[in-house]
Length: 409
Image 1 (cartoon, rainbow, N blue to C red):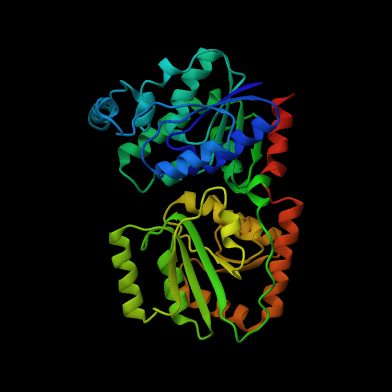
Image 2: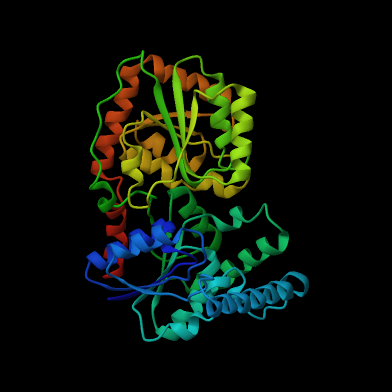
């Protein structure tokens, strides 16, 4: 089976595509990843990720590493701005396929030959993928890793309009639909009246990411600090990720707790972080840690006690989806405290691995954290359950086997 995966930037940080590429390669497929490099990840992380893979990578080099590359990037940027200008101001659909895919301009000239399947994970490339489906004769898998109409609803109207039109026109050409939660899958299926195979594929780690994980002893001594962690690719405050909610919660905790924020952070956000430390007197309670290697995320979380999630539902996407970090925490053997959003609650209600709090209520979150700090038996019960359920079914290959079976029918 020959499979093409289209990534909008470096695949090392497109974890769902990365895991899918590895899965298909292990199944004996010929895997090709089209991967423009746009500077989201460091060259070292990108190179190290590819060094451990054997599938084929096609790169449309726009990395600004040399004059030729810079000129190509400038050309692509100018064309993309023109396409956006025509759509935003006049609704002229010239280049509609490339509206959100600046890095993919010119892709059709690079993709040659026939494929059995094309896999995408963003609405950004849906029109382009349908075009390629017709060209290559492939079937199309649309991995809707977000509820995109909801995600873009808070942005400019022309962007929401583009996303709505892109899905409305093109989703009828999709052969298999994937979504990160049952609630999001059901919403998309009902919204577009789809009659195609559809599957929930949770944002779980792959088995290859878990091979390095060695469980640590449970923290049963209440005199020791309760170790809390949040992780992401980047640390930003005062947005829908809700990291500031976690900071305020720790400031309200009465027990001995320490929070570690793991991710890349720029100078501007460091200033915001320092402001919180000074205003709330948290210098001995909250600490920054660098982002983990994409293949070592779960391993980097082992040793903490509780994984915290602070998502805020400013749009429907936050309500319906479920973040990677939830399953990273579970696979690292942590208890989880998360807001009571439908997509997150789906997992917390199904498995007893932690507690929910009313979204944005940092005082309630603080009370739950203090409860865990004082009742280590209850905490350790959640941690044991996380480890058990992770081994049973909360890993990538468990959900993806249903997709693979469908592809082979």
